[in-house]
Amino acid sequence: MHLLNTNSFRICAFQDDEVPPYAILSHRWLREEVTHEDMMVAENRGARGVDKLGWVKLEMSCGQARKDGLEYIWVDTCCI
Image (tube, rainbow, N blue to C red; front, top):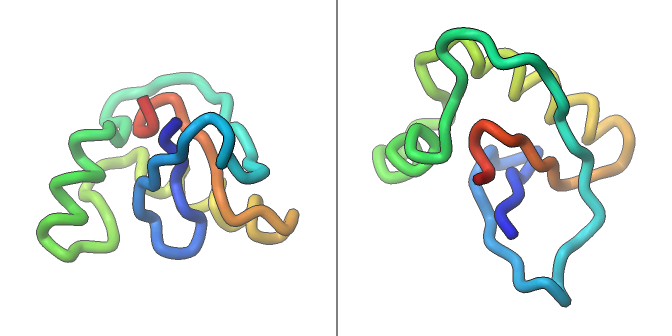
């Protein structure tokens, strides 16, 4: 399972028996959603963000998850 770390904004892979607690972002897809490929390209370039409109949605969701005490979030656009 792939989860997004709410602090580093990196995609992390977990085996079924190692999955930590996580939040789920359920949302309506709009144009310029951040994909898994976008996250991998950004990580390889050392970039923290992605230049798409959907990035703000990820930042806000990660911020809320951190407030709720969660280190990980699952987002259908970038964790699949």
